Amino acid sequence: MSSNKPSSYPQVTAERSDMALTNQMNMPMGPWKITVYDQEYFQGRWWEFTSCCKNVMEYGLENVRSLKVECGAWVGYEHTSLNGQQFVLEKGDYPCFEAYMGSNGYRVERMMSFRPIFSANHKESRMCVWDCENMMGRQWDLCDDYPSLQAMGWHNNEIGSMQVQSGAWVCYQYPGYRGYQYIMECDCHGGEYRHYREFGTHAHTPQIQSIRRIQH
Amino acid sequence: MSSNKPSSYPQVTAERSDMALTNQMNMPMGPWKITVYDQEYFQGRWWEFTSCCKNVMEYGLENVRSLKVECGAWVGYEHTSLNGQQFVLEKGDYPCFEAYMGSNGYRVERMMSFRPIFSANHKESRMCVWDCENMMGRQWDLCDDYPSLQAMGWHNNEIGSMQVQSGAWVCYQYPGYRGYQYIMECDCHGGEYRHYREFGTHAHTPQIQSIRRIQH
Image (cartoon, rainbow over all chains, first blue to last red; front, side, top):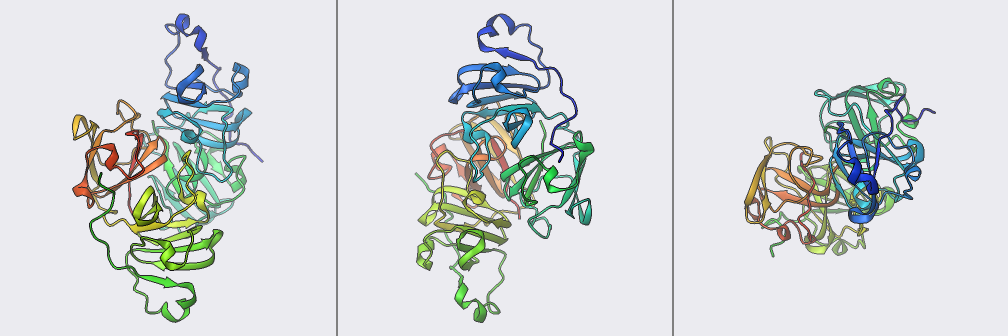
């Protein structure tokens, strides 16, 4: 089973809160920046990242209890090493768990790793979905945001396989951008997701009812 | 404080599961149709509605544990008489609470009333937001979907007031269409929401970080 990770990551760049005063003038302002806090409502110790973090515990954080995305689009993961449930993180303030997790029955209250989404913000995002695995069966080209696939003409509540031609997308289990999230990128797997088990390490169903582009 | 209701509703049209066999041929197929079940995964007793339901208990249902939207866009409410937390319901399958509620800290596990959204699906949806109450301060015109208002140039995580010129919109507390939902319509209040307390009966903060159109 392939996991949902790009093949390489830029070097980790982290800034500790107690070093910020001396270092902030030298910090590179890349196209991605996220600040994570070990307490809710942007309290406690904090770290700034401009690239992938595979394990927040390596920075002395037990968990991420609030965060601010200042640049770019990111994906957060429930477990270390970019495993478990995924959640898209776009520019804005996330003061508590509820702000960044999805509306799942199995309630996630941790984010142990995260990374930038490199292929977000393509001018033209395009992907293709099929109702069976291995790109078989009915086919549909997507180039927009779809809060309800069924309202746009898709015939059931499942997608068997998909291919991302350009950009980055987030697929959701339920209509209206709810439930499990799956981040799909042209830069991962060559953009191919041939079976629902390739959608993410937490995928246990082909149920997908809303899809949208990730832009920043 | 004004509540978030249109001034009039069409007559209730409900179909009971034990009457379906005889009545389904005569049922009017309007532009709105929702089927609600008293058990998860579309089990148990069910009712079909094509217009507003102010109290599911009047139909012998203690709660709605799953639902299918077959036509149109709807808004569900936590309490009877269209009060409490709101959730937009677009075409598709909602097999459990987690599928229709949002990702709020205060976890809603009931939907006691619901109604069609009449102004959804305008060809051109337009609204205007201000950073202060009573349409004061900085102004921004919206005509698209915005998973992150800050990524699109809005300067903070709050909106003070808004006016819907056409269509129906859903505003969310957090980026990426998460947290409390507020349904905003050109047909309600004359489209004017002058203070965050007019956003909905459950609104206790002007925090809004993502906004999208409701279409069907």
